[in-house]
Length: 253
Image 1 (cartoon, helix red, strand yellow):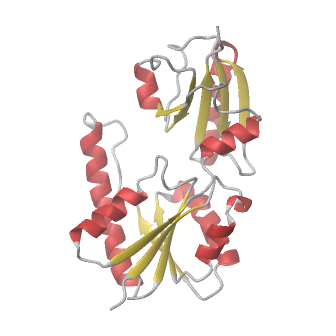
Image 2: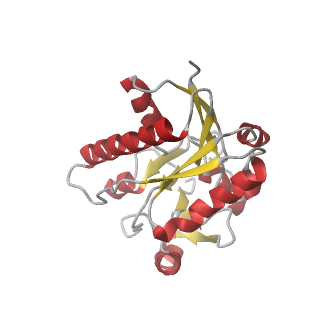
C-alpha cells in the first residue's frame, strides 16, 4: 500500500506572488489541502489559501477545514499548555488525513511564512508519524518568512556589519534585553510594550506584511513606541486579528 504524502508548503506573508516556483510545482498535483481554521474572525486567511489553491492546483481537489482546538493564551504553565495544544492538533489532523486522503494521494498544508520558523506544523506531523497509526511521507517546501519581508519592506539589512541577529518572542523580550544583542527580531508579541526598552533603540515595525492592509512604522522607540501600540490596537479591532513583527536595533557606540 502506498503512503499518503503531505507537503508542507511555505506561502509567504499574504502576497500571492510570494510563492516560489518550487511551491507552485508542489501544489500542482495536490488532491487535498488541509487548513486549520482558528475562528470566524480569520476567515479571510482561509480565503487567501483557497484562492492560492484555485490558481495553482491543476486538478480537482478538496479544501478540508479542520477546526483548530482552543488554546489558553495566558497560562500559568506555558510549556504544558503548548504541549496539550499540539497533541490536540495532532489528533484532529490525523483524523482528517485518514478520512480525506487515500493511499497514494497527496495532501498539502499551506503555512504562513516559512514552516521552519515559529510554526508548529512540522512538530505536529512528527507526533502523528511517531504514533505509527498512519503511514505518511512528508516533504517541506520553504517560503518567504515575515522576517525577510519586514527587512525588505523597510529597505534595511537585518544585521549590522559582521553582527549577529537574534530572533525571539515578545514573551522573552519582556523579561530583559538579551546580553550582547545589537539586532533583535521579535515575533509572536501579543501585547508589545516598549516602556522597559532603551528609548534610543531604532524599531522597524510591520503588520499584515505582503497584504493590502500592510502597515509600516519605523523610528526611535521613544518617539514611535506609543504610536505603534495605538495603530496596532486600532488595526486589530478593525480586522479582528493581527500578524505583526518588528526589528529592534541598538546604535553602534
